[in-house]
Image (cartoon, rainbow, N blue to C red; front, side, top):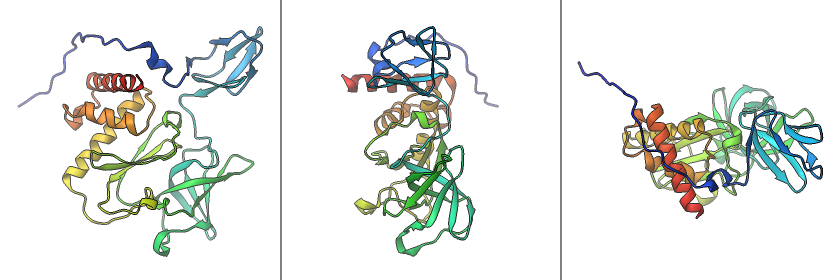
Length: 282
């Protein structure tokens, strides 16, 4: 009977340029770290003053906006803003609205008056996934969603990957057709949707795509590989956007899909991905 054995080995350490940690000009801090002793900065979320020094109260990335400094936690619930693209799961169907799980503190609300699904299709039942946009934020922090654009609506066959919202890079578009044969929706709320790239799709349709046709084995393998790549990038706190996901996919090709999540393989793939990103930044 064949046995799969893994033995520890000494791998050559690859030196990365110092610009890696400064790709977005942010620093990582833990609670108690002194961010700055300059009294000219204003205290934001995730910070406090200790002996006239601005100190981090949570573990995360330091963000500076003019004179305001705050720390965005690496692992947190989604705090949505107007215009954010989200992927969510319908948890409750009511007469005039649906409740949607968007990885927030509170369930988000999708009013029937804010719904415009292609073909007049209605959503019935729960455990159905939708993509939507944040329309407004209620006083208690709950999000109001809408799917009025053709870019949004009910999602068809695909795979959901749940990651930290802090790892999703904000971009002009969060819908990407990857050259590997699959498409990805990077929700600002940390919910990522993978699905087969449709053969014919309206440019304005965004990520809206439903099909009951059987998914081919090759498409399932591509989606499974992408899923494991996303989990690997998430485990190593790598910012997620179309380029980083594609680089990770390409770096994983020498390995079998089931081996990607092995710690030593995961580390190798993520290291190669980071190198490519550094080279891209020049």
